[in-house]
Image (cartoon, rainbow, N blue to C red; front, side):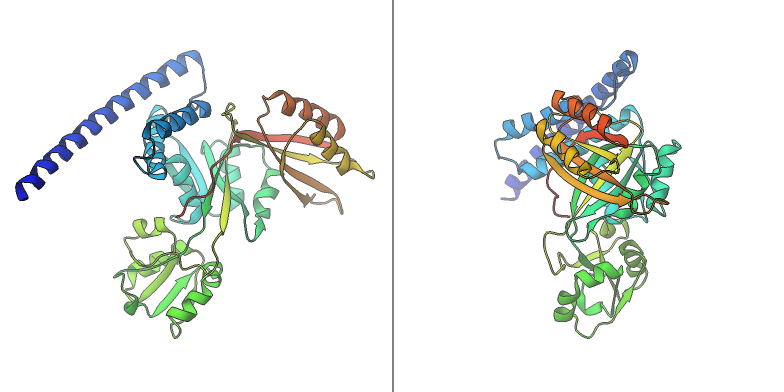
Length: 361
């Protein structure tokens, strides 16, 4: 039996070495493509090409290897190879190991350089001033609705939406030992504590809670005190070298946050895209109905509409609109022209690939 195990392990070692050799070869090929794109002045990122790769691999796999894991592995490989052509810096609402940071890692992989900032406004400023190529900000939550700070920032800064990512907000109880008996205080952001209230009441009824500025700050505290348990993200476990006590302790499932990736330019069409607009309406009866009629006439699927007050103009609003499709598609382009002619203010915030439904974190 031992001889058989040794033989299989040697075969696994050889497979790993072959995988490594192929990864190095793929990286070299990606660098070569980067040089060719620079010579031809083409965009580094081709979302349609990436979608083709994922679909081809899924078909070739035939379900033998778990599809979600396959996508995750090749997403990391593809982003690492793409980022090797040009290092990417990403600004995000910090601190480290928050769900916004986790969304950035899910989108860009671990090879990007992540820059935490204090406010959503700061993310937009860093992109507008060119301090970072990309930023990532929360825009809406399935339970709490729109993140108004993000919507208001689109009204102040000139940036473009480049992509989106969704994260299922799953809370974990963590501590240094991983033993629930060691937890004498539970620390976290007030929102996380509230979303886990029933679980805490049932499993830790006599343990006090401590409100912190963020889930990441709570995880850091837990890493320095063996009697502190933190409610934090899966990324915080790795970042602060903690152990899992209980996974998925939130009281209600289906808490998903959508994040937007912002930058200077939107990507080319991927074949499954979303276009976002910021518009103002003329001050006359039926103005909003006219806009909705234009979208309907061009057979456009409206995914979201949200109003925000214009600062300094009482009872005047701008509308954020999400529609399915890319601005390069004829019906979307024609609708844009009609909207531009009928709106008091019009700005296309970008066309970008739609993301899949949120993954468990």
